[in-house]
Amino acid sequence: MKKLLLTALAALSIGTAAMAQKIDNSSEIRNKAEGVQTNPFKNRAFNKGGEPVSAWFSIVEMIEQSNAGPALQGYVDFIVHDSLNKFVEDDGTIRYGGATSIGHIFDPKDDLIQLTANPNNQLSRFNSYKLDSIAFRYLYVRNVDRVPDGMGGDRPVVDTVFLSYWRGSQITRAAFTDGTRYARPTNGWDFGKRMPAGYFDIDTILISSRTGGIFDTTRANNNNGFENSWSSKYATFAAPANMTINANGSSQDILVGFAWTFKSGIPAVVGVDTAVFIYQQDPATAPAGLRRTNYFGYGLFLNEGAAGWENTTYHNTAQMALKASSYASVNGWNGYIAGQAFTSERFAEAFFHISVDTSNGKPGVGLTENAAVSILSVYPNPAKSNATVSLEIAKAGNVEISLVNLLGQTVKTFEYGKVTNGKYELKMDLNNVNAGVYMVNVKVAGSETTQKLIITE
Image (cartoon, rainbow, N blue to C red; front, side, top):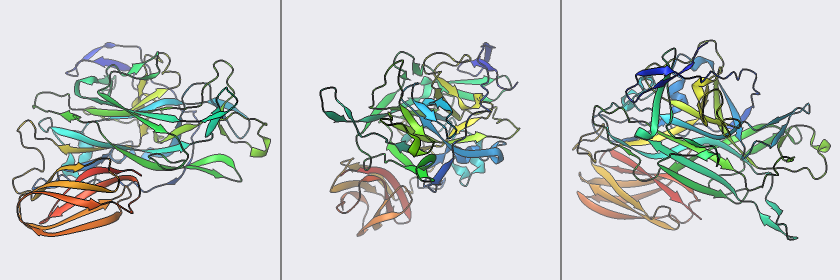
């Protein structure tokens, strides 16, 4: 069988065999994805002759270029906050939630990048860079808005999504017996809390309503209320400060990763919980007082072909904390399981936005003395009614700033006329711009650069 785990040292030398086995998921239920938006994260090239100096990297787009690419099939899967929540299928079969946390580790050196639309985006061990933002495809299903407070009243349900980040030496690189590489967080899971651990930073996102904010309810109930298909959206977030990888040419610790974990605000009833997160039978048959719970989903791709995914050099790896592996080791896997460890190899739809970092004084990809403009900062961020773009302009020209949403649509453009070289503070009026996450695109004299901006209500 392919993919028995071997441990690996930092230099990728193979150690003795550990008893982590490949996991047979060939019989798992495939959940249809309906209404999937067009991928808004089209790769932007690192122009070796100049700007821009930042780009989005789509993990699935890269895997599609591999030997397993033609056999990838897209689905959605679900994250629940405990192992008791029920999934009632249309024939009455009861199964339970699959995963509690999902993530991905990104290797910017992967030569699969050379086969994508922008081959110049492949980095080397000499390229320092910064992780600016991350994104992933999600669906959020909010069945319950309020629960009893135990005192005769009720209280609003507040669900939580945790975003955990790892970088560099916090990530272990390893290999299966066939030489296929993978990576995982070195100390990535806390069984007691059933949460990510050993991370560089973690963000906490509270969800208190059905619509608005960062995550919207995106469930699609078809066939007169039967819960049998789901729509999905994309969410993007600015990465924590200092998510910087300082390459020196000899270090191989230039990986970054993140994961998202869902915790529902609906309390579990230990041992006797009857909460249902999906009810696929005729809704008219639902028992009175059916206890429901909220759940979170993600874009999932499975390799359904006979050929196993092969990459014996690089380490792009999905991270899956299953219901079982979040409590204890499963087949030798502690917490997160590499997506390649499944018989139908699993890949989460994740995106990484990186920019070349020159804080160590070494030139990076796409950064030259000919760049006409650079963004020093956008503040405040998050912003409400207005924001300021701080620029350094090296070449005279007309200045245009555009706000672009996650679908790639320009929602507002600001013209500032022709300016000479120097530093500028340019105001943007954000009134009548919907709350959300945007890219601030600045164009001067044929140069273009971008930075993330979050607009709140």
